[in-house]
Length: 348
Image 1 (cartoon, one colour):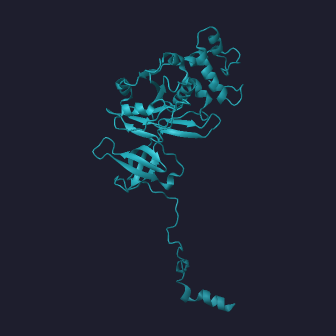
Image 2 (cartoon, rainbow, N blue to C red):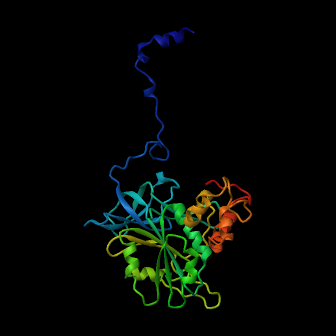
Image 3 (cartoon, rainbow, N blue to C red):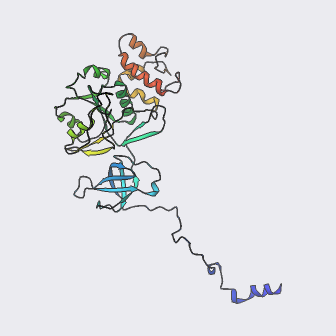
């Protein structure tokens, strides 16, 4: 073993260390992965106007001389983060807005409100509709198709759950008197607008000016016609109601932001025939029924407010003729649908 000792003592090898080892090159020729992400200090803010198959039309430089629309894609580091209409986002890359350019969305700002719906009441998977809306414009027709109070109740619940102010606009008032239908909501503090075929939208436009309002409605109620009147030049597609089924066609296929004259935005959404509330916390349902919530405050602790609930103040008020049976029935139908067990306790 003397030769090992000779090698260890030989000054010939004293200058060698591990750095002298041959480093094998990266066969793929790319940079090694790192968990360090760029800070994107140069990112610019924008407002999402539309979402279409993974591409986002974003307005940047809003209300300035540099205002322009930019087409963008989601940055890889965002993962599955949802990006929806009216989100405030930050962009990097080519933000010139020229034809063929593509920027990247690298950040989504915290949302003040988030309007959602599910496919049905049993589906807990939510579909995000819009972000940061301040008002919900519920569009219903006085006739053709017939108004559906239960659907409007669902819109109200979704609005209050999201923290947005609901407004009702009844269209086609030249075809039928809307007052019997509106009587279903007489107990609610709702601003209501009525519009016939030849009526202008001056008063409604004033209520929307300076705010972000999302328009929702059953297919065929004239929502796109109303949006076209509010935003001349919007050219939203208009459909007709089927004379046999009484149902409207889905003419608006995407959610889009449209700028109002004098400031503010109206968000046109595709028409729906159902509005699932599977994502809604049952504790918040009463928030959509202010008139009933005041009475329900006197119910026994843990009251379910269902038709068979003992000593329920809502049921007793109906029996005394102090509350509308239809209004209480609307609430109870929603509670029965959304509460997993008929006797489940609702917190107040």
